[in-house]
Image (cartoon, rainbow, N blue to C red):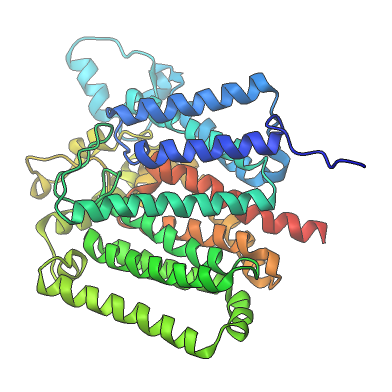
Length: 453
């Protein structure tokens, strides 16, 4: 009798799967902050370096050819940030746009112009460079997985989103939770994230993935659809409680794209499920959402709706940051100010009517901040990433094959992050960085399928 060999723990795919699953757990609870001075950064970066070191020592491969476009874009980002840390001779540095103030400071002190890196805040740029180890580790692990294990990672992500949602519901109920690893704000529904907008995006990504899980394969469709309906209803209510207006936008967008990614499977399943069951599920979910909205409004807990109908002073200031950031980007163009240098650069150039006792850590529009930080090279890298995403997304959504769901989900996941970046900086948090890397691997699978067919 011939025994079928079972995959060992040393198998590259098995080991990569478990390492990626473990890293996502660490990121779920310690990867929700972007500030350089929080303990979470040391935790997630140590774990990422530990994983990469383990891969090298264990001889695990990095199948970068499978994810060539993604690997090239990430390498370009690393090289761009690293170049901003190379010391430049005084005659080059002083000729760069936007450096006049610093040149005058050295002259006023009677000091010779030193060799300086392009970045106006080298420490912050070093932090930006160090943060890229997280997506590198996620990409290296995800590239080793086959389609079946990518679906398991998808299911694991849903579990982690549900765990974060439970924590958010505890916060909504008034329970006190202070994450010792992040700089979360007490009283806000932000899960394990430091920013409620980033937590809302995390929940919206869950709303995107759940329909795909429910309608993946034809087995156990009934109970999976029933479970997915209940979970999605809770997610929608949680988005109302979080208080993020952009979170509501990406949440609705995630639901629509998630259903669109598996529309063929939904049509097939609708023929198998009784019409009464479909109607009952739809009515139950709608009733639950409506009841939750009514109760939230009556109890004054529908924070997202309240904030959607009012404009806070802080939100007005954030909207006014964008044109100032764009003006600064023009001032420092084409060299840029350096990644992570927004705080000191904005302080030096902000108009008097924006002065306040608090400081602006980011532009709250990551597209504008990319132009300021990276200059011409940053803009070109961003354009290259968007062009790749558009081409790969076109192939993914045009292909109607049932096995093309993961590329569609990858396209949609990246889109949600891009939309959320219009009003915030979610891609600067380690968890969202890792999700972007995984989503890019999924999207790139569509190109591989097309080439092999």
